Image 1 (tube, rainbow, N blue to C red):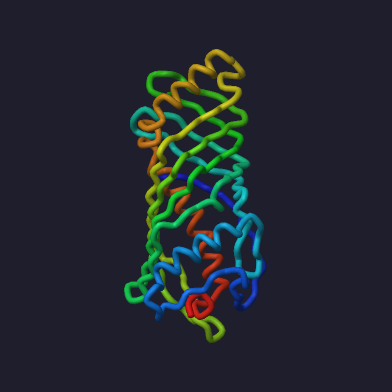
Image 2: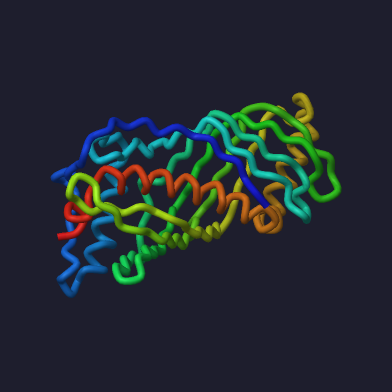
Length: 243
C-alpha cells in the first residue's frame, strides 16, 4: 500500500545554525545522555507553536499540509481517501518515552505518544465501507486519541563548511491510536440521514478500519517526520546538537 502526501516547508538557507537559547542541549559524554534527550525533545516540541526559521523548524500548531491521499485497504476500507488543506493539531503536546542516538550504528530510535492528534480538512471519498457505499465531498474531522508511535531513522554523516551534519537515509514509523473518531460532513450530497448512519459505522468500526489502512497512514506520517527532521539536520550541525 502506498500513500501520497504533498507538502511544502519553506525555510531560509544559511551555512549553519545554532540551537535557540531556549532549547536544552545534551552532552553525549554524560551518563544521563538518554534521559537528557527525552527532556530536550519534549522541550523542543512544546515550543513549536511558532516557527523558528533559524533552526529550520516550522510551526507545528497547526501543521498545514496541502494534500494527502490514503489508498483503499484490502478489507473493510475499500474507498479512496483524498484530503486537501489539512490542518494537523496536537503535535506540540507530544511526550517522549525514549530517545536514543546510536552514533556507532548511525540509528536514531524514539518512542513517543501524541495525546490527541486532530485533523481538519476537506475530503473527497468514494468506494465502499464494509458492505455500504460511500461517497462525498466536504469538510471533515478525524481525531486520533493517545497515538503511540515508534520512529526509527538511519542516518549518515557528511561534512559541510567544516562541520559534521546528519542526513537521514531511511526510516520506519509505527503508529497505533487508542481510538479514532470520524466526522465527515456532506456525505451523499448532503443526505443527513445517510451521512449520520455512515459516520456511526465509521466510529463503531474504527479499529478494523484503521488496521486496514494503517500502513498508508504510517507511510504518510513517516514522510512528514522525515521532512521535518531532514530540514532541521541540514541546518544544525552535530556539534551544536550534542556537546
